[in-house]
Image: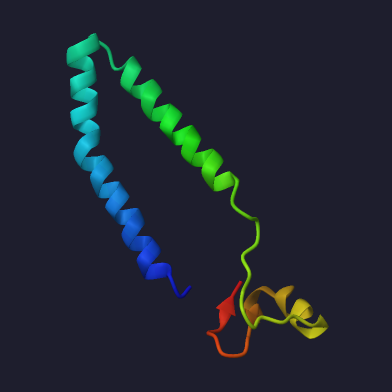
Length: 94
């Protein structure tokens, strides 16, 4: 959660760039090839590369200072009270 604002900024910037250049790419592709197929295939390939990159990330992130005991595990099973506390960091809600 410490990097949420930074990650959100990168994500929104990527979205803005795609929104700006996507229509240009599609228009150029139609002008060059008289079809949208090549641009759609190129963008689908880029999406698959991104999906594989995200899929290769580790499944669980290390949370510094987070220690779970049986009471915490029991608390996580209760949907309304699923709160974890750790030393020197903020509270995590699951």
